Structures are given as C-alpha cells and as structure tokens.
Image (cartoon, rainbow, N blue to C red; front, side):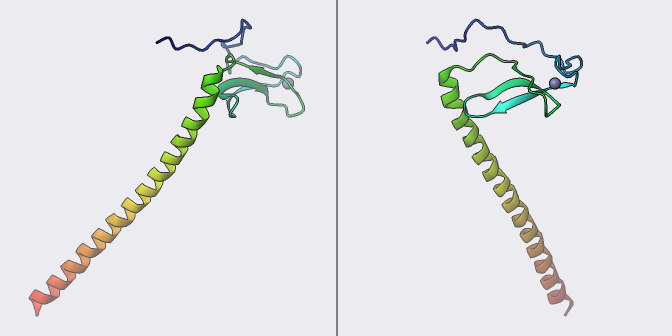
Length: 116
Ligand SMILES: [Zn+2]
C-alpha cells in the first residue's frame, strides 16, 4: 500500500533558525510556532514578535487532506486519554493515603488491644 502526502511545488523555509531570524520588515526577532488548528495540525510557522507587524510564513509544507482529517481526531483522543490518566493518578494517590490511614488505624487498634 502506498501512503503519501502530496504537496505543491512551492518552497518553504524549513531551515528556520531561531538564533538568526530577524524580521525583514521591522527587525524584531521571529519566533517559531506550531499550529494546532484543524486545518494545519502540527504545522510549523514563523511569526514576528512585534504584534503590529504582520510578517508570517509557513515553515512546513501544507498538510495533505487525509492528514487534516485524521490528526485532529487523534489529538482529541490523546487529550481525552491524558485527562483520564490524570484522574487515575489522583484516584491512585487517594487510595494510597486511604491504605496508609487504614494501616495506622489497624496498628493502633492492635497496639491498644495487646497492651490492655
Ligand atoms: Zn516584524
């Protein structure tokens, strides 16, 4: 099975370097970002740090249609699973504290039972 994403023949600045990338319009530093919109999930772009400047450019080529259909769903599933993991960790912590409390209570009961 051949799996590929086609893109057009435009060139993209995929050699972006954070150290030496000044805006040609205003001279401010350009910063590398990652888009997480449904149309461009995970696609990197550079944007000028000056909010009044509109210098913007994609680093990565456009995503194929199939990727834009699949990736947002996968990201939602990952977010949901991470939330469930956080809830499980919180429950595990509560259960550990409950277990330790039970051991302390049991030890106290045995201690007073054998002393009397
Ligand atoms: Zn700028």
